[in-house]
Every structure is written in structure tokens, then in C-alpha cells.
Length: 144
Image (cartoon, rainbow, N blue to C red):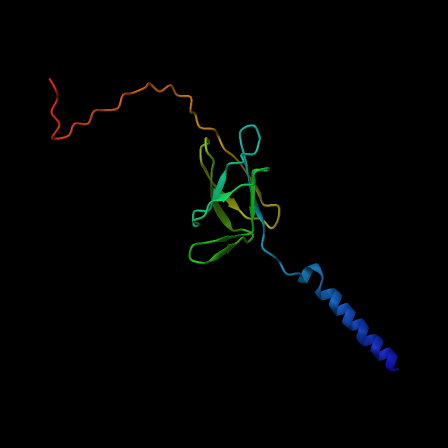
């Protein structure tokens, strides 16, 4: 009789443990977000920088993949901005030699990968060599 009661109590304990540790009661962690910076040919731009307008820090992308991943942003006032589904987030993406771009993204429950393609700056303009302008000061007198 005692063994039967102990078996019943043990079975209830195991069943409760299994039910509470299932995915329905699993603690939800922060949602990761990845910004992938590419050029027009689909190659990663390894010198790119990603920044949220409310942050002071600029985040460099990975040198091999051109991607930056985070699950929270740390704002200047000490606030932590965690990503929730449905939240709209804004980023500024810049890289030397490319036109900067501002993107807006609505966070999903999973698979948050933002691909940003930056366009190169047109640096091929023919610039004529201009002489430096002559700035005359009040005490300067032209020589005849």
C-alpha cells in the first residue's frame, strides 16, 4: 500500500515536471536581429558600420561575413531596448565609399535577417585643379 502511494506521488511529480518544462512554458529569450551589409554584386562590405539613431555607439560588422547580430541595444540613458515581435526599429548603415542608407524594419518572432545593399559613391568626377584663392588681409598691400 505504501509503495503504491509513493509510486503515485512520484508519477505525479514526474508528470508535472515534464509538463512545466515543455515548450508552452519555456522562458522566451531576447529575439536576435542580424543586419547583413552587401554591395551591388552581393559581396559583403566588411568596413560597414550599423547604428541605431538613439545610440551613441557605432557597431562594426564582422570582417568575414559583413554581418552584425544583436538581441538588444543599450541606449545612452542606461535603458536596454530589447526586440519584441511587431516592434519597428530603425538603423543607419554606412561604409566608406558607399552612400549611407537608413532602414526601418518590423521585428518578427524569428529569422530576423535584414539585407542592406549599399550603392557605391560616384567618385569619378573630373575635378579641375583649382588654385587656392588669395585672401587679402587689411595690412597686406599689393606689390606693384
